[in-house]
Length: 445
Image (cartoon, rainbow, N blue to C red; front, side, top):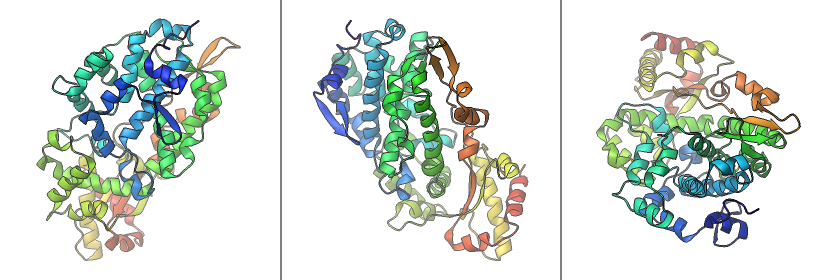
């Protein structure tokens, strides 16, 4: 019996090994004419000028890879998933060739609307800041060449792609397709964990058996999402743990968060001066230039220059609170809006100015806290052929059960206080710093 998707050129090339380009690490990506047509558009090429991990490169110098490279990796993963899932009769009965091709395009274009430092800015939940999906919709409109290429080269309407990226319909078919791109074991995580780990030079995100996991893929009991066979259980557990460690050691590394918090505080004060509809379309280098220009002569200047000038001056971590070590402080500050964090930082700067008997700028103190939203838990089913039974992974796995019972964020994301290096030593020596912080927070509660 022929594979149901073997006639899709990109899947055919992946299997035959023809028409490939190479991306790290030794990953072959099928580059058909119609894929090249999408990749060569202005809207897609801009992703080669947007780094995947932003400020992580200040700590891990090799982490300068781009969303362009990541998009190619996710696209290649979609082909591997479709090849495996095409062997599942329930999947191929639900997903026809056309829908499979729409998924392939959505995988390639899934980050189309991203702008520089996108997730960091979105996490701030500021008024007037659009979601990046809005730009994906604009770039796929008839005013841009992508729409024409989709129709002429792929026979796909832009709205079909958008329905995966920005859910509109609610059918079993679409829920199943979306779970491949955005779900517990999706093609996005499968790529970024591996790729981010590779470029950062750490092993954490690569310590799970990707091939074993892919070969275990199947449709879940309800038929509207992915599940994995019991032989993939260990690989799934290791993927969960890989994500946990990558957040702990890379994405939420204290120095990465220092730079991120410096940027967030500056952006908070400056963003209303920007034409956001144009600013978010800039390359990363151009967006940095605009922000540096806007910061000149303001209290935000040394925040912006500290992370973007040729001389790096990051704020120092002088306090850190986790849910399990300092639950009272953590619960008071974590998941609060950025406006509150700014007010509390300014309150604290005034108290420190009085204590130190010297001027402390309102932007010399920064409070960093987990954003208002929480990470999605790993909720995927494991199928035991011996028992002919589906069970949630956290039920059959003590490792995942531990994380499922606790909030993922509370393990890896901490409340931190950063201060300018000039006053860091003084603050670190204060025995009652925590008391000053609590008074600064409670002052406006």
